[in-house]
Image 1: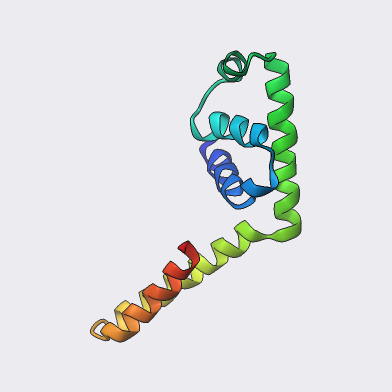
Image 2: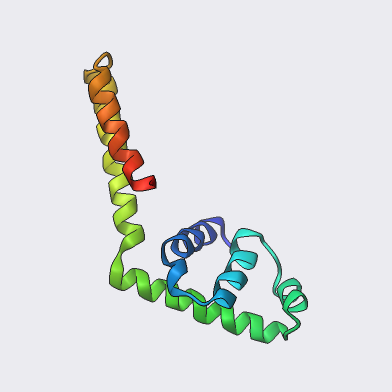
Length: 113
């Protein structure tokens, strides 16, 4: 599995975790974040490898569907890019303005709270 896809799905899981079942969250966490194989997940949950595959496929489609409708991940990326541009501008233009730097930092950390 390619790294970019795995990273995207990990982020989608972070955003939409409350909308998934515990089993969906567990399978996705094991597969994408912890890099378990389908067989390892099947063994741990005492189900068939096919059941794990089907669950992960449906859950992944569900995550993509949520993102298509709600855009939480895309909006987050856009805000992060804007924050990066703002911080770059501040560092170049106002490197000694501690108050401005604190305000910009606060904007970025609001998202993380």
